[in-house]
Length: 344
Ligand code: CP3
Image (cartoon, rainbow, N blue to C red; front, top):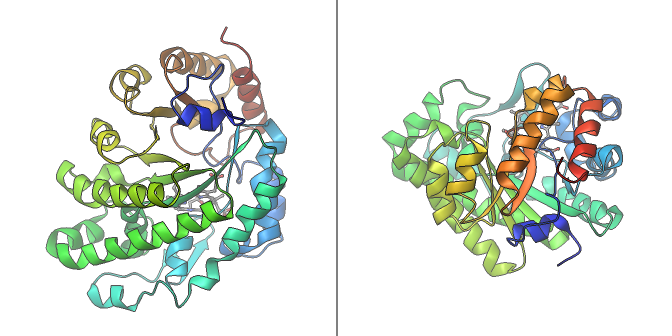
């Protein structure tokens, strides 16, 4: 057994208690985040400021002692490194200068603007040097598909009509964007591993908007390439995939991609995941972030149910999606305390 519970679990070990961490464990629900954010300029500036992003990464560790820290950054740092303009508007979300054809893809570069994002790797190294040895450090990226949705739509979308339309109309042209993002993702993740990340998570928040065939082409195929290349370069690195909202598509994903763990959203039941996914990979999930806002006995009951159904196999406790800004900090502290105790 190793030093880090999260790594043991991703190696397929059924650990004495499930390791836990929370998606978006650093962020606006924490007063100390809001305070630091208010004096650090824009959100991208915060992500690229080594000292500030190190501090933010460590804020939740100090608050509730989870088994892992996740680098504080964003999936849209990669398009920024490819030369796009990316900004975050209060109350709206990300705004990018959209790419919607081959000419747009040809303007992007893997080298020209990459230095803009290299401070990210210094943050990884700086967090690593301050993290206790029993905690894993998670680096991450978006998947090529999910990052492409923002690059092509230019913002968060309701129907994904522009990006899906391009993918249907011009498979080769859109494929070029996905190929470029696949290479960029491998580059970004490799640099994080070189800097000290123990685990990599690939966020595929919008995988669920694709039909099964499109899911195979734009999510599974690039994810296979990313995992194969990372495993080749770093045989010890652990990879968690999060193809959110794909329902039974999770089975296709875990059988083909080569991840060590899969994160499930709240639409999938733990009983189903135990039966159909846990034989293949470690399962991570899946408390509803809204239950975390409510707190109280309901939250503990639901957490207990998830544990009972998944902890006989390799399992990491987490949420089905990120912590929401209105979540009371006390609820996370209470949940963390419960997760450290033996099962009731
Ligand atoms: O604690 C952590 O989980 C690490 C940091 C992290 C952030 N974003 C910080 C963030 C991670 C892993 C992400 C991933 C991310 N970013 C995803 C995939 C996971 C998911 O949540 O589905 C996506 C789709 C994005 C893109 C993104 N970033 C959007 C659409 C927005 C705006 C919406 C929002 O929540 O404000 C962001 C901004 C963002 N990323 C914030 C944080 C803490 C809020 C920014 C702020 O402080 O104003």
